[in-house]
Length: 361
Image (cartoon, rainbow, N blue to C red; front, top):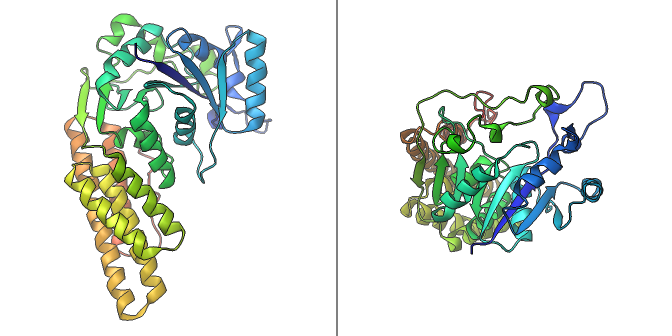
């Protein structure tokens, strides 16, 4: 039987849950129907999986949650503190949780989704067996980016590479997959959960009272199966090696690694990774240009800007793939990356925010 794990994500800052001019409150411990949200999330999945891991961002939280688990009599739950890697956020938490388990597939669930129907999770596990990542997508093309089933071996490689590139956004996990399944909540999932209570998300204190699920309107009512290129572990390793070389000031070695990655990912049809590699190539060449100066520096500056142009083109192709499948969120992310790379290619000294405010869930 396929072994499964659940990763409960409980390390966020919960900004929308806070009361102005008051002490910070831990949303994971907020009480709903007599129990903390964290406990609800764990109890929803504990009977479905072989391992449960709660992912937290510091030791203080680990101790607080351990005490809450003891008080509720929940045994056999592991708590893992996020790995220190220079960035923070759900991608780091997911990477840390993946490393802590030994299963084939992992369900990721934010602690503020307390009503996930076990039958819905079971369907997600079943449907995900031929994919690297399976994520619900609403009719308007928005994703539940933190509710996923991940193939553990490929997801570890994806998240480690994203962290090395300083990519904190969790939706890059979907973009980095080789095979991506977008599951429609309004298709067969609705037969298991007619009111779609599984997708109730507690963002604010008001949400504890109204308990409203997402009401998204749109045309997408069927699952989408996307092939996003061959996901080669050796190429992801090369990309991570390149980032390490760049950080160490080994510019020529980094340049060679990134150029190879651009070529290999592009040939494999993995346009997200080709774009990410092209960005790093452009960054490396611009740093070399600044160091060397003169005629050689000017030539490297031009090459660096050309690398950003190529990266932008890869992101454009990626966006078109999502657009063809009505995946609005990922298309917007890819286009935002395209615009970012084009701003570098034009030599702008003040770059716009990478993800404009209009790009949301």
